[in-house]
Length: 225
Image (cartoon, rainbow, N blue to C red):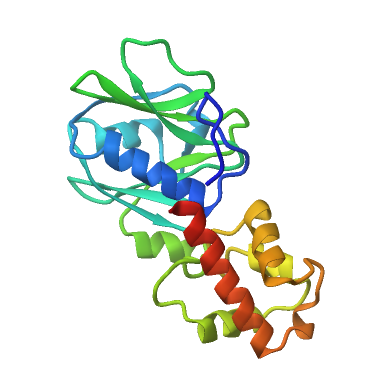
């Protein structure tokens, strides 16, 4: 996994980074009563309003954390899911409420135990919202299966990739094909698979696609280990 700066920010969060944020959420945000939702930048709220988001979260708890590709979800004990996408520079940072707000804080969950969880984002491209079901969110955003989904087989991966035209790196980064791979990990996956990023998909036979699939799983699994 890539190292984070002291501010908690890594460039262009991808699947392993969001998996790290999921662990942060599990450790510092679940099963704690939310006392307040502080929204420093309303533009971060997606598909809802600040008031609706606060109403859905205040006084309740987050019970489960899940990840799909570059998206993070937290089950709201009352109903529905809190959704998070980190854009190009977003991150989750655990903080103490009495301490100064971290730089670039856009939203913060204040818990009754005097701790808090901040969503920081220098470039303001991250988004936080609500969804009734994860499956509905995935469908609405046209996301493919998670790159580490146990149900995504080598054959299924090859079928999804083969349905696209163009350079293999662009296809690998297409979130409709598989969700979670971005620029940095695409480069590493292709390097390990010994495939040039500009190689046309049509030039890859079944054996090379199977090798690419194995490289993708190995690189991402190593990154989150």
